[in-house]
Length: 166
Image (tube, rainbow, N blue to C red):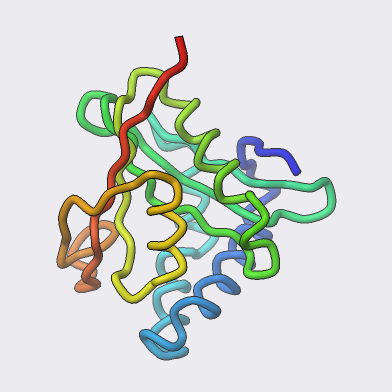
């Protein structure tokens, strides 16, 4: 398994991964119809394409040479001092195998001026919260609008410092 920058040829596979992962995670929370509505908007090919060239960001995939098993998208905020992890998803069949940790490590390495990683997570997503706590994140707040705009989806905010080796 290796982590690399996503390209336009990966977008269909990334969308498939996101749809599968979202239904697996969120159907019990929001219901299948709402999850389909969200994935159709947030994870459309057009939305994913816009992320490819977004300034001050990284769009990564975990690839084993045959299939994409995970993806991450992050952007620098606060004059580059904070990395906002917008997405980190691993196919259900690959969860618990270190893929998420690999993606997280690579995201951090892409932002050498940053000293903090921040993310938002649905409070009912216990698996994700357990993963982030195990990765050294701490709960620092909450938002009524996860993602961008006025999504109306509440989320918890977690952060961890980036420790650079000398």
